[in-house]
View 1 (cartoon, helix red, strand yellow):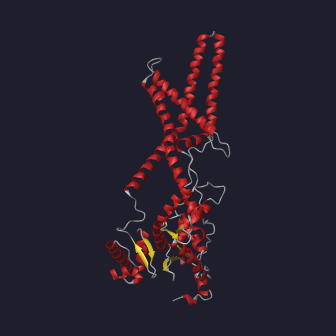
View 2 (cartoon, helix red, strand yellow):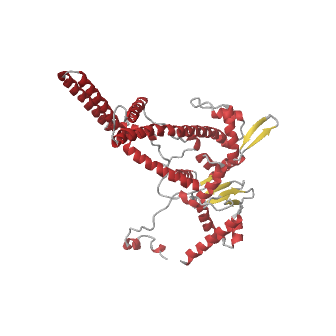
View 3 (cartoon, helix red, strand yellow):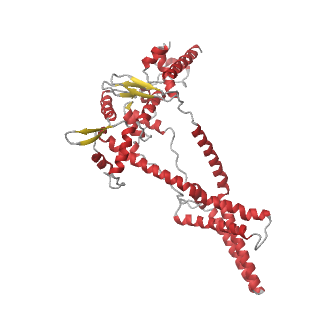
Length: 466
């Protein structure tokens, strides 16, 4: 218990000191400023980085700099805007559940009810204009048509053809859109672990950016978090390159080969779809709801002129289906605006992937705009991007990746230069060649399921006792 209290006190003192600093510092600064021994400080520092946002940088002298910003911000803390959006999302999902319960039944039942009313009205008109025998014959014929309509609606509601979307599912998707596969929230962590095991347990920030597409600011923050989360260590090479070492991740019994390692520019994001239905299916759904909307409007319009309805009937056959049918069209129309926005953002992200891939080509060596344009448009099966579009994206990447423009006075050409990324990708190859690692756990010397007799007679067991 005493040790636990000491650890809490160390963490509290370090946290208070960091809150006072509000500027970048080194681990040595923290030790000098708090008076905490370095070996105690390291564990508390990992805990602090895991809980709060932090960026890491390296100097040419080989020092690692940490920056928590002007104030400590919890990694998983939510802003007021995020909380409001979550509340709205919960309300939207609740509305979806309630609306989905009624959606297909309301549309199909009211469609059947209105068709039945129309057919009965036609029957009454027919009986009034014909003699008894022929009228009765037509009456039963029309009754058969009513039965067919309800039979058709029942078949639609119970449609279950293998490999084909049912009618009810099509109606849901028409209003709320087809479901999108949500990515695993820990996918980056799993991908990084698989990458590290494959790459001798070391990596640099440029490789994280190639995997996730992060800006340099984001990369510095996530690198610090991953080091704390996976018990890694930050080191600086002889060339002044900051890299992370994760020895503990290398050792294990389970292979992580099943986790795919997909670079940012090769990621395939599913397209945003309006309904995901076939054209004829959408036309059928639109026709049925438009019929209900028209009939409910006529009921409200003609009430008091051609007929007098009770308040209950007016609500059930007028207002309820009218409001429902208006929402049925209004929701997908409003969602369509959101989809167009998402499709535009997705297209911009696709352009960013292609241009960023060209930047990282040949270890992010300096390139002219013409060279980048050729790399971006190298695949004839992809959309051809104009030089202006590529240049606009390069202007953004210069800021995000902290690059610069350099002019070659001899050739008169201007190059896009990303020194940090280039140096890191060069250095990490040398570091991996020099690094010797072992993932072998060696033989098992203790088994919790073994009996005491087996433990006492196992070769070497006596040597392991204190």
